[in-house]
Amino acid sequence: MQRHTKLGKTLALITVGLVAVAALIVAGCTAGLAGSSAITAIISTPVSVPVTITDDPGDQILAASLTLNSVVLTNTKGQTASILAAPLTFEASHLDAVQEPLFIPSIPQDSYTSVTLTYANPVVIYLDASTKQVVTANATLAGATQTITFASPITIDKTQMSLLVDFLVAKSVAISGTSVTVTPNFAVRAVPIPQNPTNGTNGLYAGVKGKVSAVGTNQFTMLDPRGISVTITVDTNTQYQGPDLAKFADLTAGMMVEADIQILTNGTMLAKRVEEHVAPNTRGHLLLGPVVTVTGSPATSFVQATREHVVASGTAPTVEKNTINITSATKFLMPGRFQNTQAGGVPWTPTFSASTLFAGQVVNVATTNLSSNTATADAVMLAPQTVGGTITSITTASGWTSVTLTLPTASWLATLTGQTSVVVMLPPSPVATTASAAPKVGDTLRFSGFLFNKNGTLVLFAAGIGPGPGQQI
Image (cartoon, rainbow, N blue to C red; front, side, top):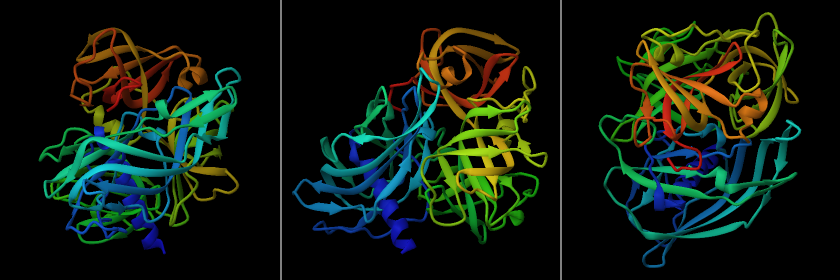
């Protein structure tokens, strides 16, 4: 049953990729889950196609999930291929301007002209701009079935390619008072897999999270937040980070990890970096999402809008609100990825602790005792997040570029912090970018990185740049 479910998820996502295939750009994917699908009428040799997902979120939206119930492709001859073996639920807001590998499913070689999808169970967590309350809405789905006819047939053949699925949450979710309506809107496009990828759209992914389920020879298996098992290889250049993870031999089953991954041209996933989140514990949970309220100074507890939930086996609720208690034993950790981006030194030294935690930061929480949406944190690690807005000024000093970014009025970050702008720090070394040109005053862009509060000013140390809110990756 578990294998059947995983396979269904794999194929489900691939269809998501093909769903709007008119505009897709994928690159990369979780490895190892290519398999047979419920093919009807179309008889041809299947090929593996890596799939990646990204998101363009709404200003007020903290988390958004959706279930795909069925996906059926139609080829140029009118023959069909049913690709989704079981319903798949996924969360999109954590993918704001960043890309995450999904799977490498097998698709029959053919030319496809359209796809028919059925949806269900939209759930949205948003911030009410007037009350500043976090609201979980079982949204109304505007139409349960959608048929998309491609502008030109999409050809799946032996050519090595990848697909990028962009779930346009900003265009899919409408909030009016207390009423939330979801009209799913996807964009998809295909690109080749290069030998040397430069960002998430062409095969270089940062911060893929999961729980190690098995360790082999020069590879390990990781259970991702959707409960999907993926296989990741390592080589002599793989970097290891964490108190108990200095080399591959230290990697053990049960360990919560974050990996930076390159998708190779043969579809293999190669770990460039593996970081331990907390000491191995088979009962553990890893919760990712923004902090929405903080109690105490220093903090004694906080509420998190949880977007991803990694568990030992199976799947957890896709989106939820959790109360996280902090004790004297709770560790506050700066991620190794942040340290890597600051190798050349920083203009000032930021800190992350119970004293500096604030509503608006995105964090990972490692815990062993989650119950009834309440947990005590074993560790809290700062996580990357994305902010978008309009550039009003740019200055440069000591090789660092400071970009002042004015936030949209309805931005949940602006509402939670009371701030109208963020200072984005760009390091002297290049950062991954999917923007068409270097930032300039007047541009509307999104920056992913690590957020701090410096004496009342929000400062983001950037690790990536993407096109502005409302623009497809």
